Structures are given as structure tokens and as C-alpha cells.
Image (cartoon, rainbow, N blue to C red):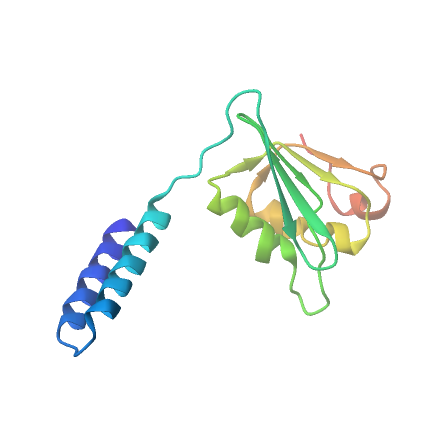
Length: 151
């Protein structure tokens, strides 16, 4: 990713030098490009031992929360799924987890089986490894009927 970004920066600067542009615009553009590079190069790290980080994601009609410690990740609810096929599991939750370098979820907590709380669950389970699911309804009822127990 960084080599591609660097190549695009060099190409842009080469093209930019031929244009009749005020020096202040050149400086502003160069600053913007360099700051973008700094942001892209940053790595996300897990919290230190005995600390945690909670991120609340806006998933439309409700929320999804990701709690991360030094060694574990918990996801609370996955947001809605709509009749059009759009769901926040694949549109919001998975991209966030991937951007944070999270490759597995230790526990997925589903408060209850309303579609605005569990609609994104199937896509989340397809996109990332989930070690354990804790549902607010007993297995075999509501949403839990759709999935076999985890081993």
C-alpha cells in the first residue's frame, strides 16, 4: 500500500510542477499529501494489559459495540438487515474490524433476536472467525434456530 501511495504522490508532484499554480497552493497540496501518507502509515495496536477500548458504531437503527482488550475482542450486536439485502454486518462492522487488524472475535453477544440487532450476524460470521456466541434467547428459539452450536 505504501509503495503505491508513494508512486501516486510522485506522479502527482511531477504533473503539478508543470501547471501554473500559486506557490501557496503547491505548499498546501504537498502538506495534504504528506499528512495523508502519515495517516495511512499508522498501525492500530491493541490496548495495553489491564486496559480496554470500546468503540460504538452507528449502524442505523441502533448501535454495535466493539470492546477490545490486549488479548480479546467482544462484539455486541451486529445491527440491522434490510429487505434490499443491505446489512450493517458487511457494510459497517466487518470493514471496521478489518481496519483495526482484528482477525477473530472471541465473543459475539446478541442482545435479542430482533432484526435490527442481529441482521448483520450472518455476514459477520462469513467474514471473520467468531469463537463464541452469547445470545439473549435460548438456543433453538428466535435467531438461534438458524445456526448450529459452535464447537
